Length: 419
Image 1 (cartoon, one colour):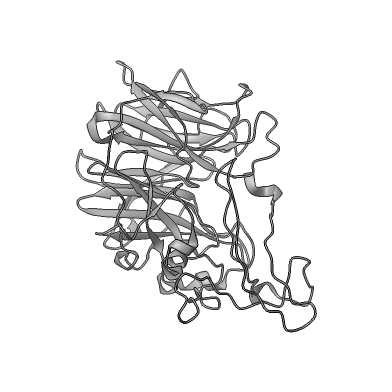
Image 2 (cartoon, one colour):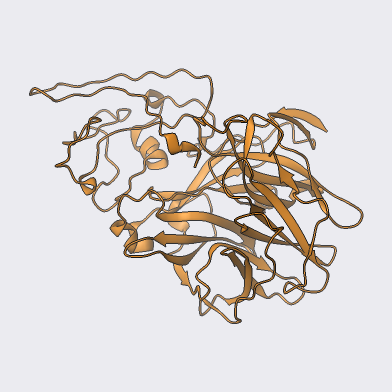
């Protein structure tokens, strides 16, 4: 094994493997385009591959969401099966009351936004969240697992987008709070159920159980639970384990991926919010997986020394972010987001200036104005902080015409970034 800084810094959740290419998918909430997919041939070099939700017509009701930051697309799962890449996600709308809807997207080409299908709405009788897809190699049956205080699998028929069996409660976790985010894996004839517990904070952890007979249980809890946690360690990486496994990646090695925040033991400041971390996973002779603890620098399986360079149309994660060397349209298409796609489309560069970003001023400013509605929008171009040490600069071409018109750069810290 070799040592590496744990720097898989993507804001996201679950993963899968296509041949020897691994893909991560991020939660998106109110942003558009969203459900962003990242890919890597070696688990070190990551590129932005596509946005699953990239056309307002895919989920037309998205445009009606208000400014509640908890609405929209929650944690998603990406799975590969028989030549297709599947993404299943919970769509949340709180108006007038909480409504949880499942949407399924598929593609044959994860590197092309337009190749992603229209959404398929899946029935959600138990009104649960955090869906996971699992194809059982016993008989090819497709299951969808979800949670709301306990784990509920049911069989799923894609042709009708309905559950063909009642959702059954199979495990409540280990008595910690908020059991959530189930993922099912099969190894050595056991069905393993991996979940998160302890809510989003210092008490968060990942736990696991297994069933020797079938997906329906009964499940026995791993005696060494939690399988992953940093609670009580005083470590720099605080827990937010929305956890998933990369099964048998490439050369047979297993990996785990989870969310964490660099907030320290006090869990007070997390400038970069949720970040994705990776860790090696080994399997004991008795069949239980063992996850290496997550630290800032870790030892892990040997990785390829080289990989194919990114495609010309891919955005390299942690690469140089210099707009004046990239056509603005390409930059905006891969990085621009808005909470209202129908009213605030991606802007175009001014004529003859392909490497310039242009926005039309809005009537609101950073000091706010009670007369401005949220739906009116606020003109800004933002770059999320993704490193503790970095350089930032921007050149403006701005000609104010009346008193009160202003433009500039500003650093914003939102106290809820860690959430």
